[in-house]
Structures are given as structure tokens and as C-alpha cells.
Length: 335
Image (cartoon, rainbow, N blue to C red; front, side, top):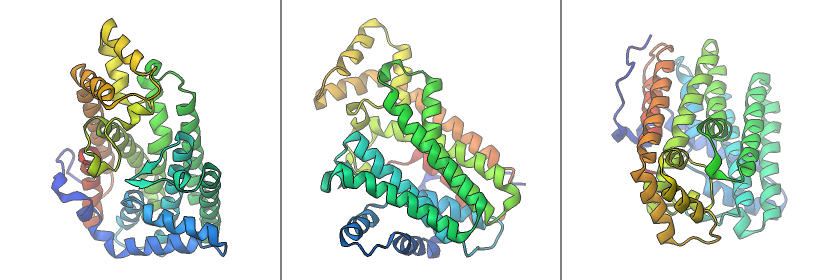
């Protein structure tokens, strides 16, 4: 068993070093994505190529590959499975952007902004369906079950968010359920699927590791909305506030502030187009109320939970070390 129970891996390692043990396979993920979504319909192919340019840092596929290699060997199905996980992730982002009427994603125009909302919704549907077709081709029923469950949870999470008409009334318990669906479910599935083609006897452990990591990751993402740098995050500070999204710093601040500050926040949420000054006022208020510190502590609590879960996996070298580094990356990243 690993004995690195609570020793953090320095954030200086960065995502590039986390990906080092599987870097020769990451390029293959992009090619697999291109193969899976290839189309003979010119308009569809145009959108597909744009999506591949929009892809993120491949964090979830990296987790899958690392989990698959903890046993010391690579499996031929790991790369196409990692590509499927990233395609499902892309599908959720395309749908979310359409639902939220977002115009930017990672500093680039969204599909719904460049084309229209109908194209965005259908594109997301195609990504989901092509992913399921690829899983069927691979023929691993457990992987289909895991990713189908995560996809369902993410859809439920989006509905939960839409039904949160008053973000100011959201409890911390409701917030936890929301991010468990929207973020943690896919990271959990990525880690579980990696174990299925690696160390299958640790499938459940990796599933729980991915859940704890996903919870820590999303809370840290909430913090970036208050503290991030636009040039790094690809979205302006206060973007979630502007879109009236539920975030943990706000949930905790509403629990702590007095009547006057509570009313200030309520008034902000009635404005159709808040100014940058309006947003900065709420950011300062949430910070002074301790909302950021509280959220940071909860993110670190989930990170520690992820470390303790990973302690149950035998330490086998580079892959396990990178999984530990991924915990620090999740909570300390700046983008």
C-alpha cells in the first residue's frame, strides 16, 4: 500500500508532468476522437473540426489512462475509451453553452454563437450517440454502464441547475448534489473505466477516487470565478455570477452575511445586465464574508479524501505518482 497519505505533490509539477507517463498516448486520443465523429456531411464535419480545436487539456482522458496503467501495463482499449470520455465531456459543454446562451468557451466563440442553438443541441446529441456507438464497438458492457450513468447524472445536474430559480436559496446540500452530478460523475466514470482495462479489482476504489477528485475540482473552479485571471481561464472573472449560477462561495456567504449585505446580493441578482462594478462589489462582499476561504477549505477536504482513497491502491510507479499530482492540480490550478 502507498504510504504517501498526506504529503502533497507540488503544484509546480503542473499538468504537463502529470501527463508525462501517458504523453505518447494523448496524441492518439485526438486522432481517435476525429475517427469516431468523422462525417461525410460537410456542414457536420465543419463543426466537428471546430470542436477538436476547442478541446480542453484532456484532464479526464489523462485520468483514465493513468488509472489503466497503475497495474504496470497499457491496454489497447484505453485510448479509444479515453477519446469517448472526452467526446462526452465536449457534448455536455456544447449543450451547456446552448442552454446558458454563452458566447465564449475557453476564450473561443461557442458553437451556438458561431452557428445557432439548433446546431449546438444537435451537435451535442451526435457526440453522445457516436460515443455510445464506439463503446458498443469496443464491447465492454461495464464501460457502457459507467458512462451512460454519468451522462444521465450530468443531464440531471443541468436540470437541477435550471430548476434552481433562486440561487440565493440554494443550500450547501443541494449544491453538493448539483456538482456531484455535473462534474464528479464524469471524473468518477473516467477513473472507473480506466481501472476496468487496468486493475479491475480496484474498480470501485477508482470510482470513489474520481468522485472525490471531481468534487474538489469543481469547488476550485468556483473559486476561479472570483479569483481567476481571464487570460488564463478563458472567461472573465464573475462570469458565473453574471449568469446567476450556484457556486459554493456564494452559498456560504449568504449563510454568513447580515441583512444589509444579503439585500445587496439580492438586488444584484435582480439586474438583467450587471456592470463590472456591480460584480466586483459582490466579489468583495463574498470574500469579506469568508465564502472564498470556506470553499477553499472544502476543496482541500475533498482532495484529502481523494488521497486517502488512493492509499488503498498499491504504489506502482509513475502512474500512481501522477494520480497523486492530479489532486494538487485539481485544487491549486489557476486555469
